[in-house]
Each structure stands twice: as C-alpha cells, then as structure tokens.
Length: 493
Image (cartoon, rainbow, N blue to C red; front, side, top):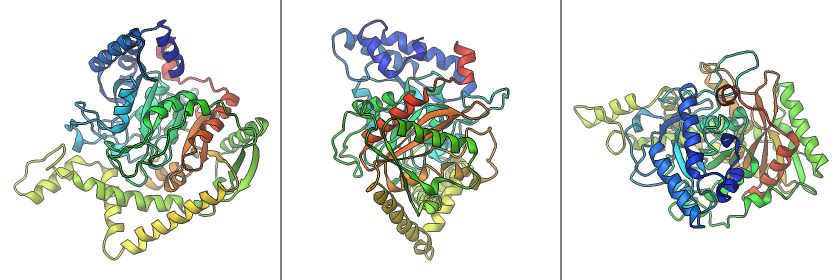
C-alpha cells in the first residue's frame, strides 16, 4: 500500500508517525530496482543520498519540525542542475557534467524536505514528444494496450518523470514544458501534469532549450498533489530575470473551490479535422461534468490557433540554436581531441548531439540567418503576439478553457519516428498555451478503446493557476479515474 499513497496521504502518515520517511524511500527505491530495467525511466539513481535525506527527514519529524514535503520521495527530470549529481539533459555532450550548484526549483524542493530518488530520462535537451531521442535509450510507458504487448512511448520530453510516477517509482516528479512536455506525457501515462504561467517558477539552473517558452512544473497522481508540489517550486528568483515577483497562493486550497459560477470556454478551432471520435466524446463528457458542477459553458474563438504549431517550430529551434552554441567542448561536458579549435568544435558537436538536436539547430540557424530573419523569426514573433491577443480576448469572456490534451493516446515505440511533422503534431493542443505563456493542466479523464489513458486540458489566464486547479479537481472527482498501468500491476500487486 505504501506505493499507492498520494503525496498528501504520505505526508499525513509521516506526520502521524505510522510510516517513516526511510520506509517510504526504501519502498520506492525497491520499486525502481524492480521496474526500471523494463521502463528506463531513470538516467541516474541516487539511492545513498536519498536514504540520507530520508533519515534527516525522520529526525526533523521527530523534533516536531519539517516542511511541506518532508520525507516525500520524488524524482527530478535530468534537465535540472543538481549540485554534485551529474546532469546530462539526456545528451552525450553533457554526459560527464556534474554541476557545482543547485537549480532554484530543486533547491526549494530540498528546502521543503523532499527526498530526491534520482534523475529521470527525457528527450535529448527536451526536444521531442516520445522520450525516444534520449542518448540513454527510450523510456517505456508502463501502460499497454489491452491484449497487445507492443511497447508504447510515455510521451515527451518529460517521459521519464511521467513514467516514474505512473509506475509507482516516485510519488511526484519535476518536468519542464516548452510545447507540452509536461501535459502530453501526463496524458499518455494517466497522471496529472501542470505547466504553470511562464515566470511562475524560476528557470535558473534548468538546462535551456527555448528560453522564452521553457517552464518548470510538477507531475503527480492527483490534482491536489501537483498543487502541493507547485507551492514549493514556485516563487520569485532574482537570479532569473524572467521570474515574476508575484505572491504564491495556496494552490492546494484552490482545489476545494469548485466551479459554480465559472464560465468555461470551448475554443472552436481545437476541433481539429480527423480528431478521433473517442477524444471528441471525452471532451464533451468533460464539458457535461463541469456544467453539472455549476459552470456555464461558452463557445469562444482563438482564430490564430492554426498558426500555433508553425510559430512554435520557428521560435523554439531559433532559441535552441542560440542556447546550444555554448556546448563546444571548451566549457561543458564532452570534449573530442582535435588538432585545432575548429576541429575541436566540429568534432565535439558532431559526436555529442543526436539527430533530432542537430535537425533543430540547423532549422534555428537557418531562420536566424541574414536574409531570412525578417521572413521567418520576426514574422513568427508577430504571429505570437496575435495568438497571445486571442487568449487575452477569450479570457475577457471566460475564466478557463477546456480542450483535449493530445490528439491521440500513447503510440508505439518507433511509430512516427520517420515523420518529424507527424511527431510535431502531438503538441497541437498544448503549444498555444506555451506561446501565450498561460498556465495549463492535464487531468486523466478516461480510457480509449485499447485501454489507454486520455487526458483533458484546462487553461486559464496568466497567474491564475488557482482556477486551473479548481477546474482540474472537479474533472478529477467526476472522472473517478482509478485504472492502473499494466507493468505496475503485474510486478507490484
């Protein structure tokens, strides 16, 4: 039963001393040892450090002290710098990199008493929707289709973090969301994933992909648990110029608000051609649940949504090509021996970067090049402003939007890999929120015909995560999602 606890439930048990932090941590380390050879959700497991942190947590609880996460074992996406623990970004070029400092988000989680189990797998430099571009091999989704043992992807880029929580290897985890990299894997793995407002959580110490889009956020099994984690992760950081100096509300309390009197928008442009009927039905079911709980459903329009994906795949690679220029064999990680500096740069970057990262660097370098900057990057920024205006106009009429999280359930390992455009379409419902910088959450709401989880997405206005959690909690209560992934059930039941 220890592995079935929520963060809130484990916290109560630790405070009541019916369970020790050491017992809780050992149970999750045993689950990692048992399941990770199949799932490859972790790149680095820090068992000794986790046990030391758990012992410190038990001592703090014994003294009547402790923070909101004291003794809670969680996993950290291997994109967050952790002092003294290697941080690879799932890339060979950073494989030997051991940061001498802690990211702000992870330092705040440690401040509040969390126990770190290890660093989770991801798409290389967070570029992907499947966790298949990792230099350390793909992560496997713990869910399987009914009567079919095809190995499925967990989504990406935070697929390792999502799989670890879904399989019972951690009570919660951190992720980053640049175009849907928290919400899409949460949907694929049947858990909750939250992307806060851009600027709500510090990006200091997070390996940068696309700086104007990246935002850290939490994964957990319930809406309340993600609210508890976000309460620790959020807050102003003077070391990040994009971090906003705004008060951090009691997100967990917002989960109990309900939706009576709220106006929920249905963006008509999200009814994409060819969307599976079961996803359309689930979307309608979600709207019915919110209407039954007292919300008013309103039709709205986001007319520039159709340009969202194209805008994203100009802005994100452009910023990636700039950010990744620092990995040259001189300052970080891998260095390939060479006779001169040019050969050093070329040899190191060729050996260190995978195919998808090289593709995006080339796209980004092209759109930023002389003669094409105005035609592509500048125009994309203008369209981005129009997409933001769409959201601002919509939130003048409604309090939140409800959409599907992804256009499909989890797909098979290797499917879509030969078609980058098809892979990029996985983010079609999540990318607009990143472009506008607004918060969004994915809540598991049902199963498809193959028995795989499907998520619904709630989006609200800037810095109104409380409404996102309130609506998400109503969906969670109504859906009563209790299904469990096959691999977890087979191994640990």
